[in-house]
Length: 157
Image 1 (cartoon, helix red, strand yellow):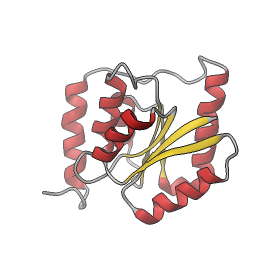
Image 2 (cartoon, rainbow, N blue to C red):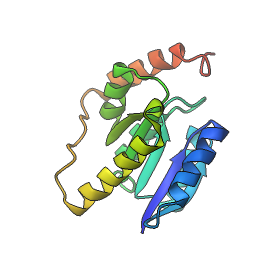
Image 3 (cartoon, rainbow, N blue to C red):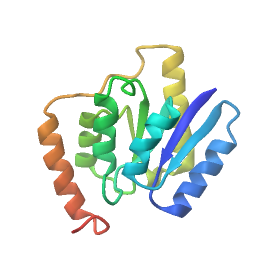
């Protein structure tokens, strides 16, 4: 059984994703977080195998959550599916730099997201099929995350 953590700040989207996961026989939803701080706490409590992580959340955003998870020895093996509502190449590059294993836009829909999750599961069954993300220049990644957050009206200060 695959243990999945969901981190999404929009309640309607989170509910839809919870239903998607509930329909899968081989996936157990072990936690659901409404913001980045809750997601970080949920890693310690639930030890998920895969995380669906919204990148644009108020407060602690998904880029920082991803970086923290991949830097911590206890959680670095967790697979991360980074999600965003914006089709932004810079966000995709930053997510991969922060350690995301897969990037998907919410506009691609639940079917595409399901395929990405299954792809990660299949990659676990056949190691080496998913390329390791770039870990280069983490300080540059943090400054790009700050720039991206300023573009998002939900995270403007």
